[in-house]
Image (cartoon, rainbow, N blue to C red):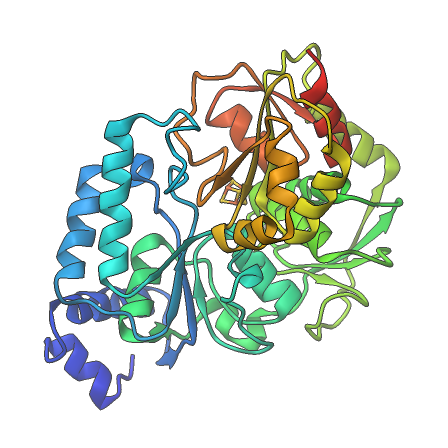
Amino acid sequence: MKLTKLQLEMLEGKHGYATQKSMEILSALGEIFEAEKMIPVTSVQIAGVSYANLGEPGLDWLSQMAKDGRVRVLTTLNPAGMDLENWRVLGIDPEFAKNQERVVNAFAKMDIITTCTCTPYLVGNLPHYGEHIAWAESSAVCFANSVIGAKTNREGGPSALAAALTGYTPEYGYHLDKNRQAHVATKVKASITGTAQFGTLGKVIGEILDSKVEWTIPYITGISKASTDELKAFCASIATYGGTALFHMEGLTPNKMRVPKKTLTVTESDLAEAEQELNEEDAEIDFVSIGCPHASLHEIRHIAELVEGKRVKKETWITTARPTKQVADRMGYTKIIEATGIKFACDTCCVVAPIKGRFTGLCTDSAKGCYYGQGRNKFQIKHCSLEECLQEAFIE
Ligand code: F3S
């Protein structure tokens, strides 16, 4: 791989330890994927922030990098293992909280903005069409590539941090236009509305793509309208069930792609079957979680309208980015929602927070939340619309 003078200096250690280690990671990655050169990135989003995932070895590595590493581009974090301010109310163990704070402090020392969210594009880390970036969280990567039209591979925690500390990433994968063409025309012959249904659609298409190695990018037709919230739900789901990092939805997303010859069709009955899989019979629900991916201001406002004056009977969380909640505070939505007993969980989510064993059954409008709730946390699952989730929260 051809490196510039500055990149070579970084590799030789002339710009400090953390920059050198970062350039080593990026060069190795570039060699593996046969990149010809490094390209500048303008935005980074780092995943692997929960202490539950990092542990002491991960934290040691971060602390080493934080000694002299400082980011060169706008960088934010994925959700951490807890609400950084309100962790006590959410029942987080103080020992875990102490360690999670050490992790976030190490990132802060590197000048990383410690907004911990999987929807950075809603709170100020918003690239534009065609911009090269290095993001890590799968749903955000899919949203950035597909809905925004920025260009990113799905980075791991170390490679995203390395991109932030150097300002570069090797040019391969989704940074190259030749790799951003669709493989299969995907006709949706069903009416889809609401975040839950878009999540179900993501599961159906994702699972088909996952079963065919040669199909990575779908060219989707048949969807006439989708809100940003619906697209974020779809991105999270198709990335979870299919590992998909890029799709095109005709008339709705900005990338220019040729329509592939190979075709697959998604029908109402495919969706009904998937919906059945997302709903365990007789699931014993004692936990309701909304906000996977992190709830938008629009969703929070809608929740406030739906719950005003009521009282929840089950533990219910809204997971969101702290800046989103701060606006909700100012608008009075938080007050209405918290008066019902619903809790806000900022900076974290029901998947990365250490809540395994605390609940029996999870009710959520997120297909991704169901996948991890069942797989990682061993919860029974119920998948339904946001409105139905709230109704579930009000039942004894
Ligand atoms: Fe975000 Fe956590 Fe869901 S990171 S996409 S809220 S699993």
